[in-house]
Image (cartoon, rainbow, N blue to C red; front, side, top):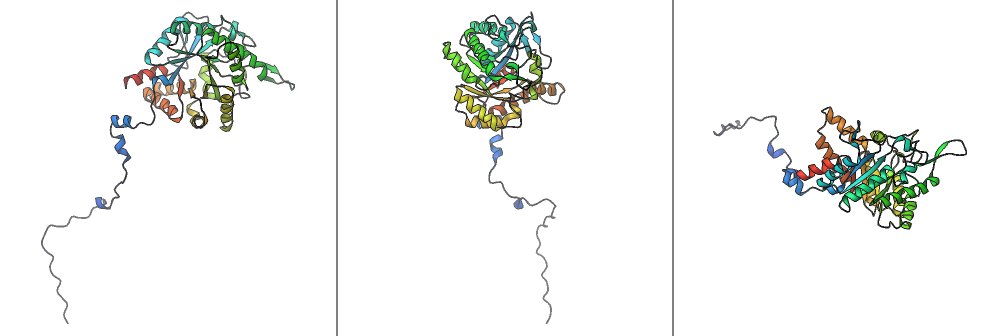
Length: 358
């Protein structure tokens, strides 16, 4: 039996030489292509889940006594301690850009500071004079918010009355401080503030202030409570901005950076006491807290992009490490995305202008 002869191969095109690249047919074809919705700027804007508006932004401002020209704060480029004239100009610039609220901090002279911070409720105190000047200048066109805290006005730099306890320790006396915040808030409302913002981290401060405002006939004045205010190292440049006289630290009344649940408790208490807004401070290092507060809060939620956040972005940009405009907008968008309805930021005017150019 012979072997069958193998037929010669048919003539035709030469088969391609196999390469190391996989055949297109062997590569899985994506069934979903999320990149379709990122293909151009119009499409990205069309599907954006978070929208930042100039009206979302609040500009913190500093009015200083005893100066005759604006004084730049060295650790916060572009931010000044203002005179009355420069304060009004800067507020007009913010409003023209679309910002609808400013938050005013007073910087008294050292000679006007005392143990109780009594300049805080004097009609002729620097903060109350500035509130009156802005309310007269802007009426209802610009919301005027007042920082309701004693730390700028006390000679020890704490946010309340300092006493010795029975163990000889210097402590901030919570209940002795509440009447002072009542006087301060009423004075600010008398001066024309639309919103007072208690930031002293005293237990019961929102209820005490609400009762005092109502009794004084200021039922229309709102309260933005610093509900989740952490004892943060990011406040450093602010201390320069207000000429702080702080001795020691504030860890016995501001919140522990390690904790979340206590911030939720503080927020719930402030809402129960009558807060019209609640706030998380700082913002970027506490986006998890902000998201949790936004989830539970029935009232608007603000976040404060504090001086250290602002300063570190500027410092990186000055070294050429970051694009300042890009990180400004990205940081603010991240805060809004996490749940903030309002954002206090020293970028407010610049960011509002950038939004207006889009």
